[in-house]
Image 1 (cartoon, rainbow, N blue to C red):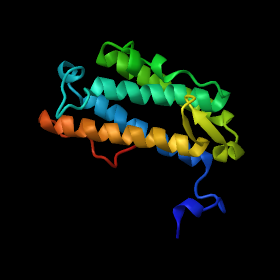
Image 2: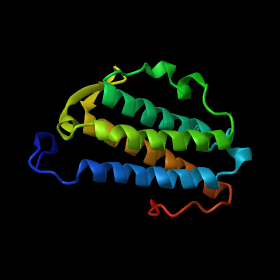
Image 3: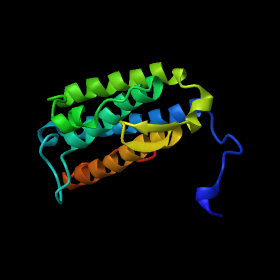
Image 4: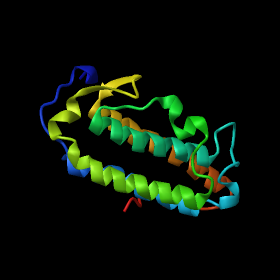
Length: 168
């Protein structure tokens, strides 16, 4: 079967289940933020990877600006996002507060996405062609990828990360 030739034939999960799945990942990532030592938050890295604070800011930017773009059709410029400009939170506590704000915002804006829009073609941030659903999957995949990097960092620092399956 050629995956590129698949068409929409049935619903596998509901839009509410997709949000719950995403928020489950966000719950686990928040546990990683909590476990991360503040004194290593902004400068610890391995093998040239960015520090956790920079990875986290990218996740926050994509989720926050992404849900806004999906709902309103108004996409900001990637170069204006905090992970590019460096204008993000300056403490771990501020990151946790921002994380919680974005979590609330996702829950608040999600119902505004009508079910038929998930297959709609969009150009995220004016640069990335896809559908609403493929863009959301990218945001989730990006978070999982960067959380995996943070797991490596935590282990290198002698800290056992939260269980990867503990998303609730």
